[in-house]
Image (cartoon, rainbow, N blue to C red; front, side, top):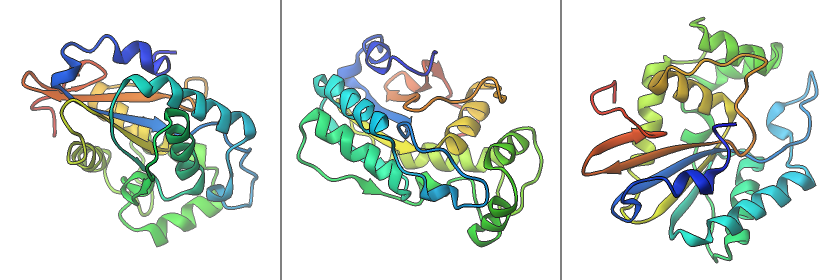
Length: 212
């Protein structure tokens, strides 16, 4: 799938040494989410930990500016295994923006998540339905992009570990990507944001002037 093969995709970026590069990653493979239980409690599987470690090892070619993550444990753990694989003695920096960048009132949104299937909420949100506690996709996407750009450094790679619920509206807003139950954002799927003298790019497409 186009969101995978991160290392191959990084190698195609022109003048990467003169660019600030941020990668929004969905966390690694997790346990199934059980109906009626808090979705945030689902942990990484052993396979997920191994795949995150492997990806970190593959990214050793690139100097890291930092690894940021959602405050949810499976995202923090993904970041830890990325760092371990890259053999970098650093810490993951959790931030609520990567957990709830599209949510304006978490107390209200929690009620929505408790009574409905999270996947259904995501698809309804993408279709334009007003979800209780959520803000607009445009505002959330601009917030996410600003958060990333403030932490990106020229000549280095910054990693941002988050969830499908944030990666998918980001892609829809900036690139017009459409998702469905059959076409979902994969674990360890990556969105590459590049900023350099030529502009700001999301997966290679210049987004200067497009609702930043």
